[in-house]
Image (tube, rainbow, N blue to C red; front, side):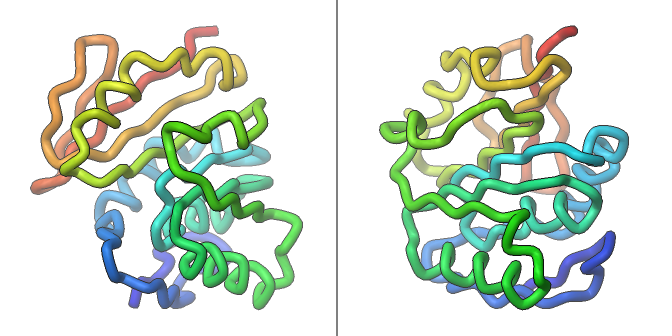
Length: 174
């Protein structure tokens, strides 16, 4: 069970299927919402490897116009969609069942904020994330945020650490 920490849906409970899912810790989600505070109003957010969907839901709860949730688990995508239906906000949610990175072309830009929380053990995905040209997808001033268990990113990425969780941030310069 997860709770939304801020915004219009503060305190609302998410009940994801936690089999194979490692939700972003609430302290990390809160820190990210603080970092993104002035960017969320009206933003389009992609929550890739979305699992529980907590990050994208937090973003919409705090003013984002839309969140696109991409995951390979149909069970969690149904639960995410159901959360938005229960809150009369279906127009703010798009779910896409896809295996990343192979099927990234199934999601259509432009986007303002991309959050990726891939399985920590799949280091090939982190190499792909660093080499992918995110500028092709992001609006000017857009941002890519990646959660890892300690994978080292190159110096183009800002690094923050919250306990055992590492956050890497890359921004499109205006």
